[in-house]
Image: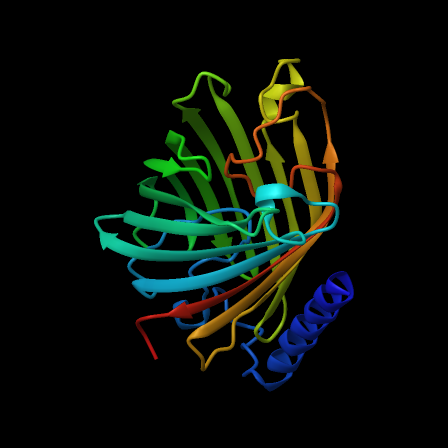
Length: 282
């Protein structure tokens, strides 16, 4: 019953995005760049992008994930919840903070928190062109294990294209975790029509499992799938949807389901949706 309900909700979300696209104002096809007023502060679901002076300064977002065959702390009946705050601090610095909720099988609710500051070291003074950033942060996972984070961001925006990706290094301060966890993501989007963008996103998690047979989170996982991004020109809201099959590239006997991960702990289908609200702008 819950599985059928989740599928209906996802179909409703997709239908709503297409309806908003039909009502949104069409962007001039001859425009060389995407106008900042019609940009979302987070174009990709699995990558964190930096902000520029051209962007709206502050935004909040809510995202929900559904993973078929997901278990334990990924969410109740495979559903995960996350709230995030993102802001431009000036001088090419971006603040990113999120909190996630997990529902255990005994119905107890647990949470995780994460905070990062990222600075563009190449580009970042305007929205278009190449941007490269580096950042540091801290996170506390569902089992109260603290980790230090180091993130590299890269993006390129021009014409109707948007490309972005991350490399995230995680050092968990726990004896039963890996020395370093490696997580990567990449997204490509193209303006299909008006306010609707489509593309592909890819995620790779715990990639150290490709060479370490004792990787502590079950092995290396990957996801590649389509994505849609709706950015109505006269609205503070933007909407994103992405998903695809989660596959294991390697396997290990160790698992740590309390670790913060975008992908579920088992192979299967995953879908993620997000709503972003700009706190500034019109």
